[in-house]
Amino acid sequence: MRLIPLKLAVIILTAGMGKRMHSDIPKTLHPLADKPLIGHVVDTAWQLDPAHVHIVYGFGGEQVRTTLNDKRLLWTEQAQQLGTGHAVQQVIPKISDDDMVLVLYGDVPLIQADTLKNLCAKATADSLAILTVNLANPLGYGRIVRNSLGQVLNITEEKDADAQTKQIQEVNTGILAVPAFRLRRWLNLLNNNNAQGEYYLTDIIGYAAQEGIAIHTHAPEDEHEVRGINDRIQLAELERYYQLQQAQQLMQQGVMLRDPARLDIRGQVTVGRDVVLDINVILAGQVTLGHRVKIGANVIIQNSQIGDDTEILPNSMIQDSVIGAHCKIGPFARLRPDNQLADQVHIGNFVEVKKSVVGVATKINHLSYVGDSIIGTGVNIGAGTITCNYDGVNKYQTIIGDHAFIGSDTQLVAPVTVGENATIGAGSTITQDTPAHSLTLSRAKQVTIPGWQRPTKQSSNK
Ligand code: UD1
Ligand code: CA
Image: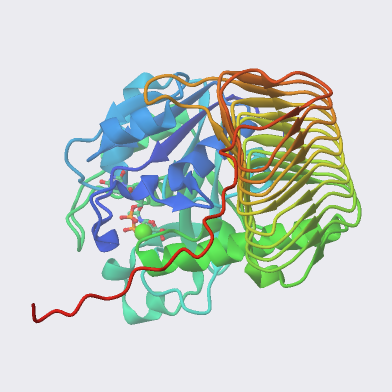
């Protein structure tokens, strides 16, 4: 095998209509593991270190461009979809003769960089390489037609194939590597005299064979790499395949999954040793789980770091937060963005925490809202405590000193500071700073009215 001899120009075709999705969203923007299909392809393309990545777009191109928001990409419109050859004709003027062209499809998301590197390594200035697979059911694909010596003669599309050609199980994935100066010439020769009246890119294979140019084939590691998405059923199937792959990777890294079929990873996960994940966990964005982290059932974690030995109990949701070691979060806890929890923090059921810093060993165990707060170490926040951080227009901060004790059902009307070691009596509405080492409470005195009678029901026919 030779190294890639020429600069690499990747062309990603995306202009097809995608009618079978029955959607207003362009097909390539439908998500696989929360990333648009075309996002997968573009990320893989950049891994090849190409000189340029071109995208040929049709309907919804503007939407695709804004979604990808990648300034390095070069865009070419194919206003009318007259076939894959026509699509490449639109972009070829932008490509230089000393490039090696690699054609990818925007709706074939799981193609792997290694497969493409191996494919490109087979293509030279004097040869081309096509990615092919053998399918038990080749229906619908272009067939790889070979002579008795096994040399590729052409690719024949399903609709143009006779009964004998339809028997061929080796099919064209659509992905190929071809030197630009040859491609440019062959594209000029294309016509649409075929069953679909389209300009087929695949016809260049026939021209190459006639000119005696070597045509190499290469097969992907796994057939799923070249699966295209045409409808939502195929999308759902590929999502399951992809999720199982990721689950297996985690298990290979030492994670215990209670059920690999009930885990969804929609981003990148970094794990320590002996992590345990219960069922129906969703990990999204960048998630880091320390050693021995335990995640209960039905937990969603997004863009967060969880420290060693921390346990997230069932039905909790954690977003954009950093959690220390030996913490206990949940069940039914909600950490909204921008929290920083130190070690040994306990956040209990029906507690919502937002944009707060919580010190070591502080406990917020029941039914509380803590927002825009800085809470010291060893603080105990009683059940039903609310930081009133919003006056309807502005947000204000609550500061609670180390070892403070906030009695149950307290409202802390921000901006307010509770001193170190201060105690707040239950049921208080605190509107002013409270001194350290003292008890503060704001509560009407309890009174008793002896012999008080409950009201009785009045008769209604009066
Ligand atoms: C194509 C191949 C076929 C191969 C199959 C693999 C041709 C003629 N046929 O067939 O050999 O087995 O892919 O899936 O190339 N596209 C455009 N502009 C167009 C037409 C298509 O950008 O005018 C894009 C589509 O968005 C898609 C890709 O090209 O990403 C393939 O188009 P599709 O219509 O799926 O090709 P097939 O007819 O299935
Ligand atoms: Ca297709």
